[in-house]
Every structure is written in structure tokens, then in C-alpha cells.
Image 1 (cartoon, rainbow, N blue to C red):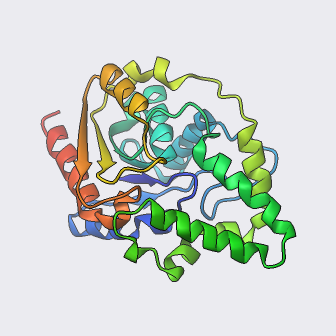
Image 2: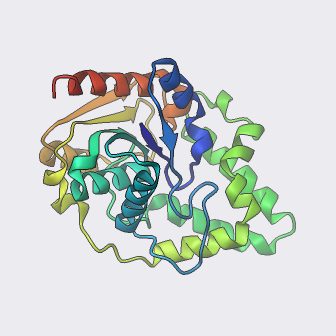
Length: 255
């Protein structure tokens, strides 16, 4: 199982899911794409989602992993789908957590993040950023009790330690021209896909139009609405994510 966080996620966000997968006998690793979590943040790099998918493939090569099930949160799901059509022999299945066929890194989340930059020039600007992030995480959660200060510190560790580099990397992401259109290649995603969407209504998850695109173009897809959850399904309902992986593996048992 290879777990991919979204733009503002990290390996830490999968800690509960990974523990459950281990209990179920699955081996899992989390890969933070370039500029995400604790990964490096070069100012000049190819931050396209296509390039990110190829980096994931390179990591799998380095670890000697020929085939894997991919779990992607938000933007991580778009990276997973790109890897699936570019290297179909390597992807057994995909579990998407609130993630659709994003065609650009520069979505609503990145536009929101770019608002942080002016705060750098304000006294205690970083403290203001942390409070804003914590508020935003609470707003998109079904039950915000999990969004404690220690959790937010872990989610934003890479950001806080390399704030300036992160802002420069975000600017580079905003200027990326994606070389391939995912929606035109979804027919090449031949593996089964389970899409988990939250019960709570919010404006940062998979848009309805993207969900309908997946339903129309993916040959083997199931959508599951997870009760008592918000955008961070892996935090509020980790059992539902591990359950989706189990369901996927059961279906693959006959293949």
C-alpha cells in the first residue's frame, strides 16, 4: 500500500490508517511528493502532477516494489491516477480520499495558501498563519476535536521549518503548465478505483463535476459516502479507509 498525501498533508496524516493496515497484515509506505510534507522544496523544479507521478514511480523502483495499491488524499489522488494510466502494470488499485481528476496544482487550496505570503511581513506573522490553518482544518471537519494544536504542528512542520522555501515552491506550482490532460487519459486507468467522499459539505473536496467525470470515464469505479466525516476522512474515519483497501484487495483476489 502506497499512501500519497495532498498538497497540505504529510505522512503524519496517515498514521492511523497505516496502523490499521499493519493490523490487517498489509505493508504500507507513505510518499510525500516534492514540495509536500517534509520533502524538499526547490524553487526551480517541475511541480506538474505528471512529474510528481513519475517521482512516485522512481521511489517504487528504488524500493523494489513492482506493483502496489495507491491511496491518495485530495491532490494525491490525481497523482495516483496519472501513475495508473502511465504505468498500468504497476498499479493494482486506487483508493481516492476526496480526490478527483485535478488538472492543475493551482486549485482552490493553493490559491488559499498564497494568501499566507503577505503575513510574513507582519509581526508574529507565522503565528497568524498557524491559527488560520487550524481554523480552516476545523471548518472542513465533521467533528473538529481531532484538530488539536499538536496535530496542526505536525501537519505544518515542513511549512513552519521552511516557510520561505515553501512559499517560493507554491509560486512555482502556480506557474506550472501540466503536460498531459488527465481526463483525456482516464480510460487508461484500468485498475479498480474506490472514491471516498465525506458526508459533510465543504468547498475543498472533489467537485461534483470532477466526480461525474470519473463516473463517466473510469471503467471500474465505486463511490462511497463516509458518514460522520469531513475533508480529512483518514483522520476522522480511518477504519473506512482501511476498509476500502480491504474491499479492493478482496476484489483483486480473483484477478
